[in-house]
Length: 350
Image (cartoon, rainbow, N blue to C red; front, side, top):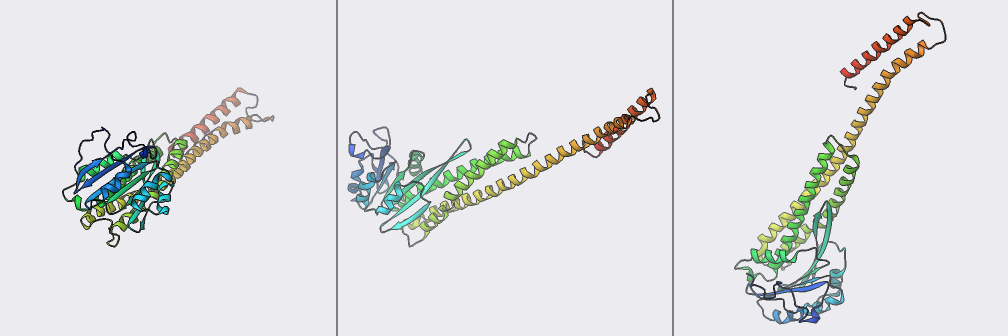
């Protein structure tokens, strides 16, 4: 599937000026067609899909961005799609899944992007037949050019016999790799939170804010990444027949990566929970240290208070109204306070 240079300068993007009917969604559609594993055409009109699929050895890819329900009517007619699958493709916040229909399957997944500690999930749907792959993006957050490069770089001489299964493998491989990148970014964030928790500065508000954001991101990533195990596992089943037997090792590799994403995410969730427990314990220990010092200083201050209170009595006593009484009270204050200070210091209470 080695690509040929695009004459338009924008690979696989349909010229909507020459084909006004292709004004679908928020971006021009992307189209490609292969025959016998070689790129035959790209940037052709959406309505030309049927013409390319007339060849039994042809494989077609179509990408739509921000398409509405009525925009998919052409695709539904071309591939005989069920209205329920079309509704799921244009609806937002569908769960990660792989639904099987007669003659095709519907995939819904999410591409995570971590930027500045914030996690954004870009929804991606796909219709898969034996010789066609139609991807439907909700926004431009998914890099289609990276997907095309992956197809071109990983294609081999035998990919022409695998139909759309090879395109599906490239799509899932890229999505799972991006999920791994997101987990790595969240792992780095967890390391930074750990340094804050065990650092000397101990900024409580920042730790609370970042740990809460990290837990929220991990929960969101887990919700969309863990079901990918079932998606890929379904594709590995022989009765599904969406992927050629020669692609089984490739999908098995993707499956291993999905397990790694799930296990890594679960491990990070436990780590964040442990960090929160450690933060509470350290905060309690710091509070105990403060209370211990305050109590020690209060005991030291109580000595001169008691002595001056005793000598302040309006009663005659040895040294009353004499210079020697002042000297005696001062010596008692200094000796007792100094003794308490030394004792507390030796016991690490100050």
